Image 1: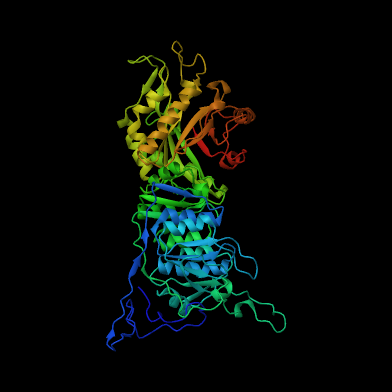
Image 2: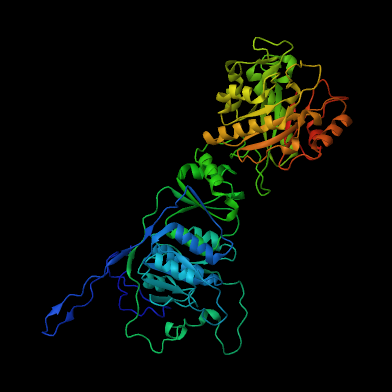
Length: 601
């Protein structure tokens, strides 16, 4: 909606302007008739209306490096606009001017670009070539200059001071604006992100609680009148008529596009351009849209086809696109969000406490000692006391032995009993319904882990089901169980990781854990080459030592020594094998580092 009645008003100096209140909203009245040489009046032509054209990113995800505000503003403009008949300009070091400019930019629907820093008390010099090139690309006809920065040559230039009030800014832009809104220091980015048409607030820095008096006989900076263009730009005399911006209508927002923040501070000009183009801004802590429930649900509601991420920390772009696709499903892990272990220290962490075993087989662990409802209740009871010991979210779970090491070769000759999915499904589904995590454990015998993992793909497609590999029970071609400790080569482990990561990508799933059981360094050869790079996976080394507590602690320290970076750690408590007694929750969490996953067998 446009404001009318300012076409003949002076727009060079705008300090206290009166907006025409009797004009119909959205309509500019015709100019007075102009006499002809014969005395017959002829109506003045109605000014043409120019349109902004917002453009979506050319890729599903675009990551904008915001470390240089001037370049970041240019990049954002290039990303979001194809045509902008008016561009707003402010100096890159003038926060007050940028706040005023942001309000004007959103009202107009125009990009906000920055000029280099201004020297104190003097205007900045001519625009640099990159800014000039962007103005040409945008087919700009005019600029709205805010504060002490020079206008580029060859374009209509209208100037307003920083801190211009609502009436003055409405007069300059010919658009409706909202109330004046002082912005406390440190809240500028949030205030700009909240600007919205049809009447964005007019932002300005909040006055300090107490302002020291200026030198005797001088006015405070806020009382200094704006400097006319003729003084800033060297024009010897004012023009007979004041320049005005062309009539414009804001752009139509590009559908399916949102902006992401959360990777660090974002220049105000970038945020203003994003809001001017009509993009919603979603703050994603830790620069990962999967990190929290609130962000996952915000993205799920928006269902974006494209994202513009403001901060290099969001990159690379292809990884971000996969993360957004997962968040857009709205499906969360037990404990909230889509990260198995949130990494950012500013976010609540997660820890897991689970029962281990196989349904209906009490000899294999406490999980199989009771029916499904009782197993769910028992797992939750095991997790409960841990919640008083940590500020992290503690999630109950079950680790189900899906393939069981067998004393005999079996029909397929692999010394592993693969339990049918139908046998496991009741417990898997009950755990999911109870908000618990599930891990499927593989003891493959003479076959390989990948072959067995693929047999349970239907279960692994469930968002709350993860995978564990148990090398103790991985046999060579002539080996049998209990005659030696099994082992696996790292290439086989990495092949499983690659397959599982691809499964997560294909189905846009939340992160999954890949748990690697180990109580002897010989169990995983070349472990230093473990591939921890998969963004879709959280890698866990689960230390399975049993016996007396000093020996278990020694095993814990030995397995951790030389482990690849990025590993999470698991600890197992044995009801019958640990001596002199199994650790209680407080004793378990006294282990350092605190285990991320605790299982009970």
